[in-house]
Image 1: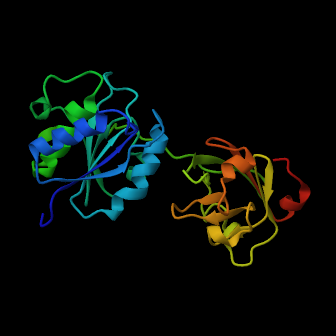
Image 2 (image 1 turned 90 degrees about the vertical axis):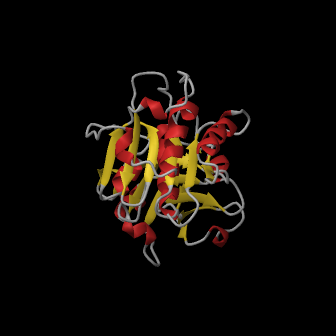
Image 3 (image 1 turned 135 degrees about the vertical axis):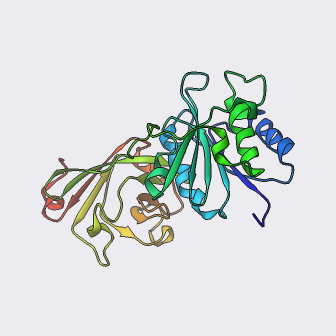
Length: 276
């Protein structure tokens, strides 16, 4: 590896407590030359899907050889396994609770190991802070070029889930959901161009999107294209339909939030009414 070893951190720990600092201290004590990058510590608490979204949107932009530590771990201290997942370009250290599911879906080849080599752990291991005592030292030793096979045996029964997909509820009708609300109040849905290509076609018309208290009939290409306070759709950088407002919080305007239903009507269904 010609560059400094890179370890990224994605957690739901926030920044008000000592947790992130302790993790970084453990890593730097083992591999002082490591570059530690914070992807996010604002994952929704206990929300494994939100963690899966966060890491899936960031990991591939890092150099090959990067170690990604992903800890959203409501099962810490239970029988859930610590795992090491290795793709052709990256290592991922995480609890085996599905937080890497969207990475698994993106990578053609991935090997997952149950981390059992306790001599790499920080001792004693706290039953409430595996990020510090298990995941951080394993990530650090990986950055120190310890071979992945030394941490444990490969497994096939690792936990994974499919991200929610829009569902057809009739001819020209889809029921979708808001996956998350970003800090700007944009509503990130689970709708992709493959799900509803008519929404994103040039000059598209004859559709209706219903979310919260609003009906939306415009999909634009940039946030600034709408009038102040207008709610409309864009294809965001995550690859999903976003419900947005120009310099305003669409979540507040629509009254919708994470988990809210999004109804899409295409063609004749758009003219027929709101019911899905």
